[in-house]
Image 1 (cartoon, rainbow, N blue to C red):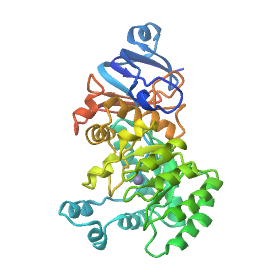
Image 2: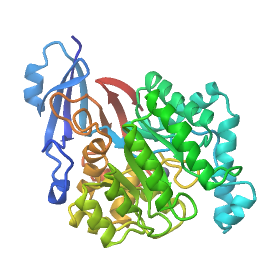
Image 3: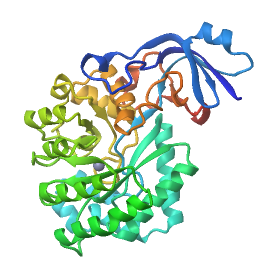
Image 4: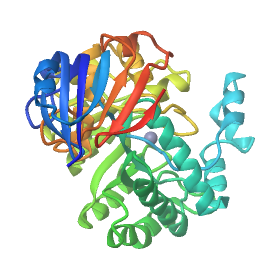
Length: 413
Ligand SMILES: [Zn+2]
């Protein structure tokens, strides 16, 4: 049996608490142990407590001395588009020069350019690029991510992306939770109804029978997949045993949050334009809101979701990066914490809860990751600071010291 003793964390941020997503005042309760430590056996947390107690029980365990640094559970990023080819640097420059989304799309940019690049990239190259992205997440202190397909938009290519995720999960230390997002956009060479039929009749049955995804997601927005088409696709997904996540109310308040409640979705994501009725509907159906301020920031918008109202309404808020090449090219959860605190009036402890334990529950992993408690995986990150609030405060400064997955060091500086 392999043992590791982590000692002398200035703050061991455990997030120990009720075995469910945290709401209201619970979001601020981090259960911090000063000069804390962990005893790890076979990749799992055995004992959590003050360093002097852990040291007494350490025996011949390998010692990891945090030397007065902060230790957090590995971040859980519940909304990413991790597998894609290339980048959108030209779009980025055009947007910086003031061009609109329409002008950029006309010049050959936008989501379609990523679809074309992804389709044209070999499996080997796509996996190599995905591994590079996975390492970025680990370097930022994230140890579990949800990852969506959606840059294939054809049966063969959507399945291929999900298989790349499967391989990535085996070959990388980063844990990947796969989501099928065939309904990300309507391909140029198809009509909306024809494409909805393809998703329902050909993609979903294959995804379900080959067990390639745990969740089904959709881009529910007028002009993309409207409420009716979204209901049709998600109802079919649900019948096949997939759980639901949804991109809703990003561009307009089109009733997406309410549809998420009606369908019993696990999460409703984005929510920049969701109003109090949408918030109330989510509360009634226990839908977790996943807020992605990185995409608001990177698009140069100032319309952030009503996070404070959601917390006051008792929703189990989650924060995520929405990592993607177009609207949110960041794998950094510390950057998201900074945006949450400065732009959405979420406090630093609330932001930490939203990006760890609440995110873990939204991915059906609340019993395994997201907090430092006995029986859970020893996934944690050591940061070069003494107070966890520094992560959101010194924005833009990499503070990761080292990252551990199942008790093994997987990234460090
Ligand atoms: Zn997204």
